[in-house]
Structures are given as structure tokens and as C-alpha cells.
Image 1 (cartoon, rainbow, N blue to C red):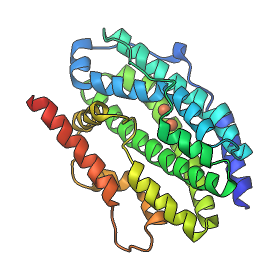
Image 2 (image 1 turned 90 degrees about the vertical axis):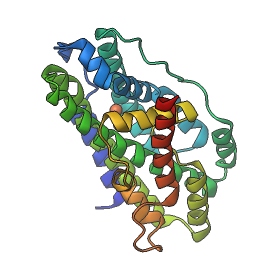
Image 3 (image 1 turned 90 degrees about the horizontal axis):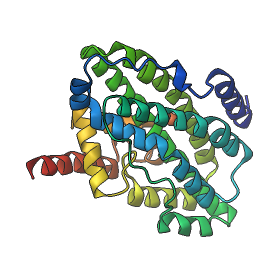
Length: 281
Ligand SMILES: [Fe+2]
Ligand SMILES: [Fe+2]
């Protein structure tokens, strides 16, 4: 099947099979609010923030890609944004439920860097570079979400919070792989079409701009390290490698045997170090 048709079919299927989750379908029964807060409170907060910041991500997208392909718009407007927003609202409601403050979000700041890319993207050949960066970020973000929600689901069951595991995290985590597949199909398709100079530029810009999901400053970088720690994510390269597997395959195919790009390894190690520094201080 032609890859554009496959992509559209995929989004059609997500739209039909995964309507946005409903708050009233959630069972917020918590066995031990204090224990839940102690163990996973900041994880819930981090995830709620990242999910709710989908509104800013859409602003970033429309800035960076002034003229995206129709299927991209279809995906982010009709499937992705409504789903992620509900994920955020549900997680935030859970925070409230266990006596935590709602997540502090930034839903409208588009960085100067992205605005510059957006101006350059009025040239189609450059917009394709931006699109590739968007798909790479999308893949890493969604893959991180899948892995993190799996670990959170397991952790909640271990501490006996079955209702939350089954009606909050379970349904959310089932919606993330479809997002990942959208970006993966898009990334593979576009990468195959890029000229060598565009590929070179994608590698350069990605190396300069990579950050773990939800990290926009140093403090959030440390938060991310704490989330990794709470979820029991080992500090070896394994997790980082899983997050960027397709990216490594596409961008760094010429460096055979590279398990994880250096910029990804550094970003994950820094998260752990910053979290340790914070704990020590
Ligand atoms: Fe989500
Ligand atoms: Fe997602």
C-alpha cells in the first residue's frame, strides 16, 4: 500500500477506535492517598504537565510548520490533541483527588528557536527538515510515554492501587502506541525522500536540540531524573536506546553499531545527575 494511504488509514482507525477518554469513566478510588503521593505523586505531576502542554505543542507545530501536509493536521487536530488533553485532565484530577496541587503548565510560550525555524520553513525544502525534526520528537515522546506508563501501571499494582491502574493509567497507555506509529510511519516515509543536505541538517539540528520529553529547562531536567528514579528506570543506555530506536536506525545508519546517539545518552545521564544534585542539596 502507498505510504500516504497507509498513514491516513492509520489516523482514521485511531479516530474511530480511540475516542478521547472520558473523566466520568474513571474510578478514582484510592486505597492509600499518602502512600500513592509519596511514591508516585511527582510522576503524576510530571505526566499531567506534559500531557496538558499539548496546547503549546500545537502552537509550536503551527509555528514551525506553516504549511503541513493535510494528514498531519488531521492527526494533531482530530486525534492527538483531544486525546492528550484528556490524559492530562484525568491525571490532574487524580492529583487533586490525593490532595496535590494541579500541574503548573506553560501552554503558550513558543521559543525563539522554533520561531526562527518557522520563518525559514516558508521555504518548502526547509519545512521538510522541520517536519523531520517534529516526527523525531514525536517518536521519542510517545515511546517514552509508553515505557513510562507501563512502569507506572506496574508500580501502581504493586502498591495495591488497582482502580487507578485499571481506569487511569491502563486506558491512557493504550492510546500512546497509536501516536508513536503515526510518527514512525511519517518519519520513515519522509526520511526516504530527503536530500543529503537535508539529512545532514536534520542530524545537526537534532544533535543540538534533543531533550527528554517535557524538559524545557534545568529544573524540569532534574524533575525528569526524579521520574526515572521513581519508575525504576536503570541509568544504563538501555532505556535511552529504546526511546530513540527508529531515530538511531534512520539518522545514524551509516554509523553501524551505534546503540544510542551521544546527544541522547548525555541528556539522560544529565537528568540523573541533576536529580542527584538536587537530592544532595
Ligand atoms: Fe498521552
Ligand atoms: Fe501520546
